Length: 324
Image (cartoon, rainbow, N blue to C red; front, top):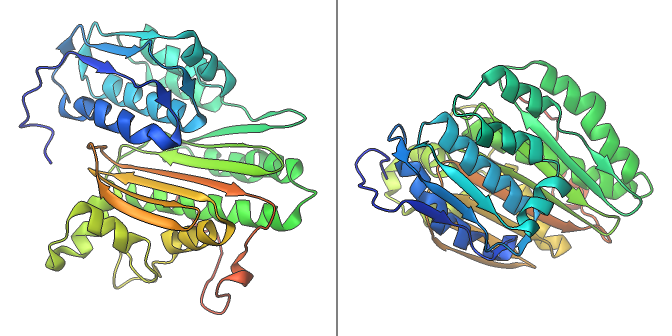
């Protein structure tokens, strides 16, 4: 689907009442308009979040990405955003207020100021919760150091009483990050987030890069597959977008296995298609267009699953990310 040959008459993005995982398709269906406004400078476009009554960390993350995409791709001119008090509270709760305001208040985006706000994202830990956003900036070598020395150790400290859960959480982080680095080649400004307590953790990453459909679909071109069929294959063992390399194609399959065995939730959205695994029940289909991919994982921590519970003889869990 091209972003250059669609005529856009609509002048408003109306966010739904619920910006939560169960209703994210509604937001994607509504927000796809932005991906067809690249360099169109749509005058007076309105981002309307006044009807939002509930917003999860996934909803806030996707809101940030759509606003960031519109700003950096000159989708609108003299646009405005209106938000409900509930949406404003969610921005503050999950630590996105200053970053989102940087995009909203400046008609000319200043990269240095924006990157400063990315680096100001902080892990917030309370007695009964942890909220952990982390910028993923490809050109910034310090991000890898921040992940290894600050971000992941704080998660480790919070969950230290459940060693096996820590192992599972780090494995999921590893696979989500590797998926981002493999597919979101053209997205230089993304964020991975976590939100959890001692019983459950949510992990999500949303990018507006190349997308699973595009990158994996190219390697499956001879099969002439629909986007939802590409996602169905993406979670199969051994399917990779980098054939004839040492990539094993285990990443999304591992995530799908962990979600199934823990009776958790996984949502994947990419370029007009979705794959959902909720409590072991799986479905896929078509939805609005999201340029890039969204991966959301929610895991109960009572009975965590590690690689040794899956197929240890076949899987190497070394976290090796190409930061260049």
